[in-house]
Image 1 (cartoon, rainbow, N blue to C red):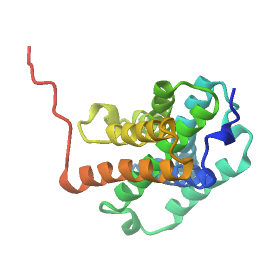
Image 2 (cartoon, rainbow, N blue to C red):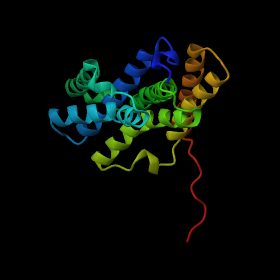
Image 3 (cartoon, helix red, strand yellow):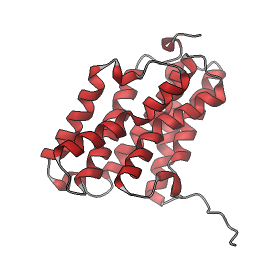
Amino acid sequence: MLQPAALLPAFAPWLDVAGLAVFAVSGALAAAKRRQTMVTLCFFAVITGVGGGTVRDLLIGAPVFWVHDTRVAAVCLAMAVLVWITPVRWWRGTALDWFDAVGLAAYAVYGAAKALGYGIPPVPAALMGVVTACVGGIIRDVLAGEPSILMRPELYVTAAALAAGSYVALTELDVPRAIAAVVAGLAGFALRAAAIHFRLALPAYPRGE
């Protein structure tokens, strides 16, 4: 088995923190919009931030990352506190959507890179990138009683798949890890940004009963 560091770019921890912070904020906001308590905001922030990475680590046989790193929970809890103490106007409009796009691309690349580092074959490794980027949001939506991102036609999971798949493909072509991560992350972010700006969506199943 390859060591994880062998296929993770040097700045990978920053990708992890970026995705973690953004998803933690989105989880805390889901609770805040329902006027929940501080405890509930913290719970939503943690479960949204670590959900995807937890499932990924369990599937690839890695130690669950947040159990062994106290900084992870600290970042999630700090984001919950930030949402609690800041004005509501900070989180209105599409600002969070754009931050979420950054986190989505970053987490997808990081998840794929970590899976490759644990000896996972290319296609499953790309899927692990999608799991890392999307499962936390799915858990958040289920707990909040909202339609899951999987059930919406917007280009969200597709953007994560593009970022993760591009990273895996580029590393298989022996592109330097740092360059592969930047290119793949930008590709995933660009697709998600285009979806937000132009309201792009995948076509729905065309056949009725």
